[in-house]
Length: 282
Image (cartoon, rainbow, N blue to C red; front, side, top):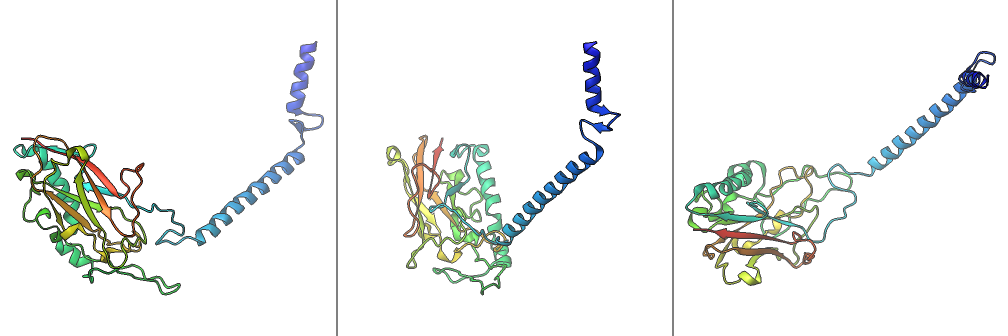
C-alpha cells in the first residue's frame, strides 16, 4: 500500500488532474515564469549587443586603438633552415637548392618591376610621414620602393645560387613590423651587425653587408599597418659570408644597432637579435 501511495504521489506531482498542475504549477504560472526568463535573456542580449557596439565605435579599422608593443622589435632570417641551422655541402646541389628556392620565393615581391608598379621612389635618409588631416584619414598610404637590386650580389639576379655553390652563402635579415615605430633619431638609420659567438670568433671570417653598412633606411618608416599601407615592402639587409671556416659549426648572432631601439632582453632570443648556426661541409 505504501508503494502504491508513493507512486500516486509522484504521478500527481508530474500531472495533477484535479488542480490541472504540471510539476506543481498551473499553466498560467509556467507562462509567467517563461515570460520572465524570455524578457530577462532578451535584456541581457541587448546589453551585450549595446556594449559591443559602443566598444566597436572606439576602434579604428586601420590601426590599433591601444598598442602594447615591445620596445624592441624581433628579427628573423631567410632561409631559416631547420631549427635555425643552415648546413650544406657546396658540391651537393640537393643540400642547398632548397635554400636558394626559399630566397627566390621570398625576394620575388621585391623585383624592380613590381616595386615600380606599386610603390613610390622616396627621398632617402628621412622618415616618410603621411599624417592624417584631423578626422580625414589619409588612406591608403603610399609605400617606398625596396628594389631587389639593392641587395647586389645577394639579390639572386647576378648569381642564382646566392653564393651557396661557392661556399659564400647569403643570409637575408628582416626586422619585424611595428606600427608607428621610428627606429632612429637625428637622421641616424639603424643597421645590422653580425658576429660569431665567443667560442667561434676565429671561424666566421669576413662579412659583406648589402645595402651598404647593413642599414635599414629611414624612408621605410613609420609603418602604418597592413590595411592602411597595403603595398608596404619591408626593408631587408643581406649578409654574405666570404671565407667562413669549413667543416665547422659556426654559431652566429646578428643584432640591430639603433640610437632609439633599446637592447633586447636576454629572455627573448629574437628581440632585436637573431641567432643561427651555419656549417659548410666539403
